Image (cartoon, rainbow, N blue to C red; front, side):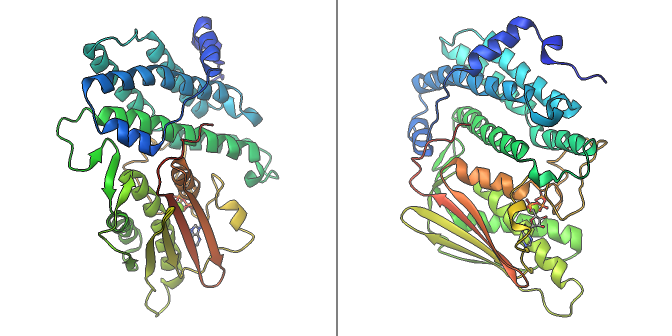
Length: 369
Ligand SMILES: Nc1ncnc2c1ncn2[C@@H]1O[C@H](COP(=O)(O)OP(=O)(O)OP(=O)(O)O)[C@@H](O)[C@H]1O
Ligand SMILES: [Mg+2]
């Protein structure tokens, strides 16, 4: 299929509008703001939130659509990337076609629409990964993919923006729940126990490990289960799940054929004043120092790649232990989204420590690429 430029499939006026909106300033919100605003989901607040999103989502989506058109190395022309760009343009068009939100009825219809936008974009990550793979295939094999700095930087911006967009939509949609569980404000849990979330995420990772290897090392968690702070449990779950999955794989691969018992993975949860830090420690042999700069790049994986052009991209149902090379860079973006960070320290020949820092104050603004 010949690659088409957006102007061949979308009207010229739409593309002009995208460029106009893409220049407008984005407005970031903090965890604390979302929590305080969402704690009173009265009609007036829902209306204000919808009016804000009507503009803000259009601005953020327009920026991404423009960037998708201008990627280096011909990435923009890869079929999978064109598909992603079309999703962004469709969503931009839906938002712009929606009239001003004046009543609660408008608000309800708008909420349904942004819910549908979120679903439309469900498979953006694996589809972009496929696009990068399509690029890789056609490239001079002498080029080292980890060196494609511009592409990694673009993907960091792109996925960070996606986390923000999905957080804003999800938060708004969830505020419509008439009977939210106690301490739940949209996606935020005002009394989230990191120990409890870490335990659930570890069990999920162990289940996959058992499925893949027939057994899984133990995971021990140290920390006060009663300690809580406001955070988004789904984000923390995702990050710990990815880290534990990596550790399980490393330990499993190292001890699979040995007669020694596989050493447990240790998770330590520390509650500081500024940060809550979660350390995931394993004795899986570590990462060689020369490999460390690569682990946060997209598509660096020492596992066999499960992505291929014929798969239906159903990443959600088809979770594997490893292979996309996305676990660490995406987890770091989630951490940074609310002002935290992720660091990896390795002792080659022994094991790896991952330090996941989560900002406790919750007042850092969303990073807006
Ligand atoms: N705890 C660890 N011990 C040893 N190597 C690790 C560890 N964590 C990560 N790595 C190395 O870093 C690479 C990148 O990790 P990352 O989680 O980003 O991708 P992946 O696990 O290969 O694939 P997936 O996208 O499925 O997570 C891994 O392939 C592995 O080589
Ligand atoms: Mg991984």
